[in-house]
Length: 329
Image (cartoon, rainbow, N blue to C red; front, side, top):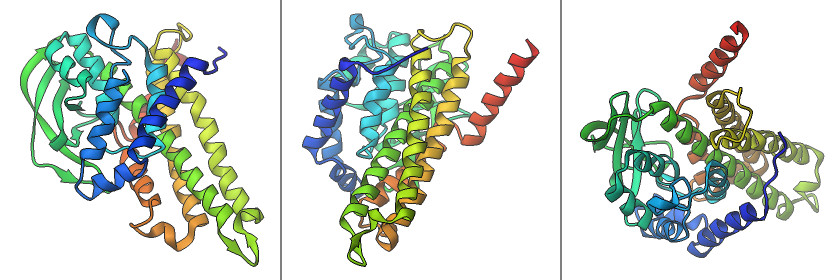
């Protein structure tokens, strides 16, 4: 099917960009990595006030009544500034789960921006992100539970910690773990896509401003090829994200395996972010390896999100299993 973003989607992206821009963009991630979470929490509160947190929640429950397409548009913009905290869970997984479970009190707190939310869903997502700053939930075959965190562990991303979660109070019984996995994986894919685009922007700007032999290095053919590789990877991955979102919203081909489409998007965006990181490092040179450069915040987050909500191997296997099943039919 043909699909293009319309003015509503571009306005949504502009709203998210304005929120993060007012907060200082990548400076929010820098502050979080140094222990100051207030700028990041302010961004989440403003996203909630703008209705972004409730995109996947029905109007009757206080949400925006939008869908997965709008969700990925918003999260791609948040990836462009490497927003710290459990963005995929707070803006996608938790609102949808709490809405489906009818957990109105928890949902109201989330939509008001008072609290963030993080979700674990074993075995694909056995650990919840950022347990210190979020309400925790656990999804199993037995339902949706409040979560109780074990000791938080550091990750390669200085703005991200993770923790194993044990089940507390049951909030709902009939919760489909696959739906949570699909939302988590697609939201993470959108964030990874934004990270890749952000790294491309950093490398391109550096290539225009850095001079060697009396010329901007961006004029050299080898540098152009590096940047082109990233641009191609990003633009090839983006339609997979949009296509999976359209499928989750129920507007795609009735015969399509939406979970397979989500997994394909997750793999493609992870690869795009990996290509962006490697090529940008080649363009930036030694400065790109320093923790003081903003690029490091993109690089480490892209690496951490590569295995969030399912490793590349897990998602590739799901695509393969779906194709094999389709052949049998």
